[in-house]
Image (cartoon, rainbow, N blue to C red; front, top):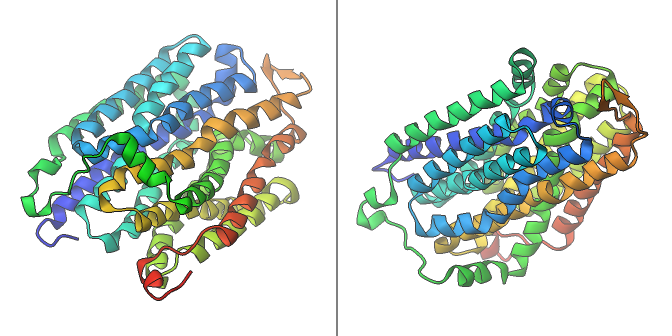
Length: 422
């Protein structure tokens, strides 16, 4: 950490991380209101999947542009505009009465949310020394998981008491308050002493993107990142609560608590994982290990476990496995120059969230394809076999991640490279 601005660095990072918490609560919120959405809009799982995808289409498409903008513009202005976009989109979603308005609202949420994780990591790279980066990526992921946890049981209880529309409107007001807080307290890069200002890349945006993706290792790391996080978008953010309700015959708030174990696993393991990768001077072995945990925990949870406490443990392991994706950001920073930090992080985050845009609708389609046509109170009722027919995508993703890390990714830690390690 820069010795002359430690507290300012922490404040700036905390403000960016608060935005990350906020956008993750919006991102994960749909998982506890699928029944309400099907009832409000008279849709099936396919319709919910497209509402869910509206967020991730915008989020995915905006990753590289957001990264390029952070390489060229000050963080405060971008983050403030992004939070307002999230709040506006969430308000449109909450007040819309057609599925298309809901999807457009989610699109605006995803557009603004695209700046959250990138902004937090760019702030970490700019305001702290390099040796802190892996740990701060882990802290960012932990805070994001805390935001997502708030969209589990707490949000389910709020929806049960006040309804999903009033609850989302309240979240929009929180976003407006957060915008004011960031605008007042966050400092821009121009406020730094000249000796500490980052060199700004003046090449064209397309040239910067080509510099990032021309490195084959970046593409393999991106595939690993996609496969590590896509299961979270399918299960924790979309169909997990409903699967557990059907599997254990429990209520939605309790299922939200169980899914919260995924986010708890992410929260508790992400910072130590970044720290351990720095201490061991090795990222690759940890990516293999976390992916293997993902295979084991998700297969047992989905297909083998009839014991509730074992599923709680597997869900925590699921979260630990997903935390492996933070290493993709650390690895890509290891191999890309400092003036391309925003662009490279944006490309990597695009790979991470593409699972929501691609596998979210695919899992919803598979679920609906196997639906027998039965309804409960006018809402489609999916049985356990329907979920099994859709959620096999989850362990498959972790299998691909394991093979990619084992055979395609090389070690990137600077000290390991200096010793000739691969």
